[in-house]
Length: 474
Image: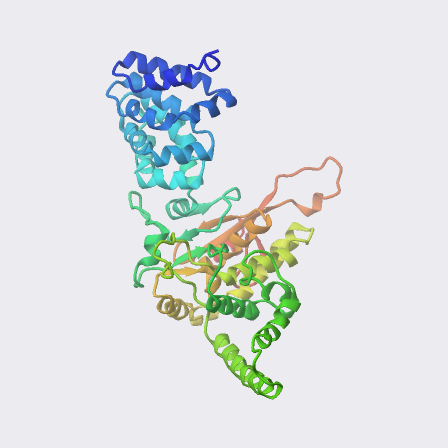
């Protein structure tokens, strides 16, 4: 009835009032109306986010509480959260977490939990200190509540880079997406720098930051980058995958045909309209030799991603593209995803990851595996501590475990990622007991296994076994 009578505008205007009672009542009515999606959409179209900032900054605890409830009811979709973020509404919301009023803390925690529904807003909330405040609240027996605990977990689950650095653990439901980075373990209270800041830092003796990113943000890369990326694909994909490597960077969307790759020299020849047939043959021979030399040079030099948008000052920064990891995703999707048996999928993927990271390593030769030198060379070449995971060709436990988790998430294999001490990390998978398969009425809980990516790639060790302990711990 209020909406039909054009009462939304007066209610929102009341939020700018100087009377605390009127503001609280208007916020309550808007909260109740927002329970219905059509009305919530209507309210969102009336610039509600800017109107809520003053009530959130109010000194009256009732107004603060009611305004927080309104935020929780309104920001149920990504567009509304973006509007709240852009209007500056997150700062006063985070500040209210310090409130000594129980109801305000509870309602604000609920609002933060709803706001943390997408990664961008979760990252911004963490930057503003919401995670640290919630952690402090949850350590207090008298101040914590179910909403503060839920908000804390929601923030971490939508900011996986921070979660892994803080907790050393990603569950099977924590799906790694493009832009994830492993900074290493950080102490409580330590800020995790954004990926952009880390990329722009000079290389140092600190542990390398591992980046997972198969998404290219360049819509039309320059020809030189096309050639380099194409060469990178040719080195990584087998001859049976020529369909993909011929056009991966050319169109930057989808796959081209092999005939397009063959037709490139022809199109170049047709542009030379004024040359004779004899000159064309000579130039083709010359071009052929130059191209052969160029390919040889490219095979010796690793294709390195760009870390800044130097081509255009106005261009928004984006994470460095990792063509090698993109190739990995393509290959495992084509070869491993079609396998029906989950156990076989895990075993084949483990062997694939080990192959890409330097192969099987015997325990007595682990000290001779010169992965540190390889990582240092990549840092020097990239002029950064951030290394795309696909560029690493000699990796140990924590490199391989991250690559396995990233690829497994891409093809739907359920696994977790756990960080240990002294460079150890491993993946845990759960499998049903095969002895009960086909037995009517038989049921047993799935068993946890550690995936061997180092000593016997593809091997599965029961979590509670001595073999698994030797793999996880020194």
